[in-house]
Length: 490
Image (cartoon, rainbow, N blue to C red; front, side):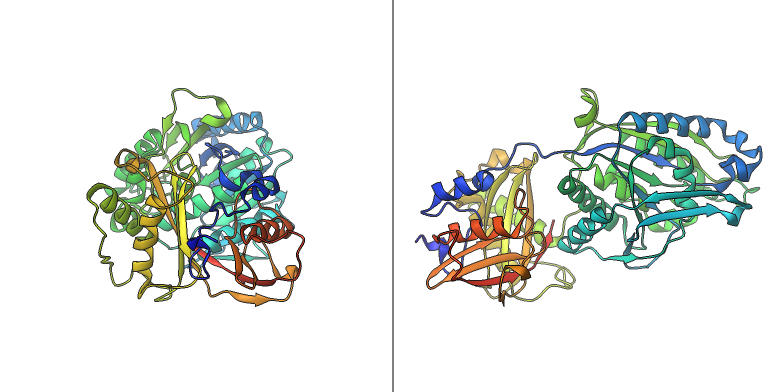
């Protein structure tokens, strides 16, 4: 048995002596596709003033005719893509300052009674399976997400849905609301949403509900601030150029002066489209009542065959300090032969144990695995030292791949999995391949498989692969089973 199969150290997909049997059991065992599926087929930005609904505005909606025309165009384009799932990013729904909110109910319903039109009612079926997968993905990414069983859809949901419902025939809804967390956290939520959508395999349209500045005019309900028109200009330019960094780095004090109502939902949208080649188009921008209303559409290259879209694989949200440490450790070792001495900010490990098992994964920008090595139990004095050691090993000692070269460094993406202590289970019924990793043990033979691995959909698959990695017969039931959870940091 190779050294990486000792109780202290495993390579999660290292080819053991039973490699032929592993490959037969699960063909993706030692490879990943060059490009992941991209089921987000369309995205848009929609304003949400109730006055633009004819039954509410009673004629005043015609003062923003360009906005109405643009929303009609978005609905037609959306319908052409035949989405099965509509992801709505609302901003005035159930709000928790430190957590995102997701509706978990059979239906999402709302009306315009608050605006004098109770007879205008909307009702959509909720994709309950999607709710569960998003919850799991958020948990794996360390993102705070709570669910609510009741949410009378607010105007940031009902107004976009009123105009876009013709483009969503047959689609189920996934409704979530923003939080007071920083834009970078909203961006990471978008990335988690994207991963969940890819797991589901649904054709998805993403709708970011967003009014811009609320302080464009002294005659408006919120007054005027010079920051208002400037925020509108900057956000319109950022969406048109798909400048993620401009949105994520916009100072909070400036946003508050401008009465911003857009940066959080735009951050989620940009996270969901991170790495895709997109064609953003600002279709309209108006502000007759002192609030900025922008409509934008975003075509996705994988769906439309775009050749002149904007590739955004190089623009990423600031990474978790441990993922950044993994990157810096690999670059220092590959370029200078130096083993980095970790120095992290005091709050970098907030919410994490001082010592834990760790796996470091390295992938190319297209999603292909480039290396992954780690330990199920801590082997060094600190979490940071574990990350440095296994980052270097993943880059240079994974037997499936040649060592990483300096020329590759700019195109690599890093993630760090922090493992909970393994706990014994009495049988397969306690396992879930999406939520739990598994360790199979029989005497000196041990095999480990991380959770949420592409292509592993059932407990039976998970156990068969883990047993094969341990050199055991897949039908052998006389084994000890352990499960563990993973906090994935990217």
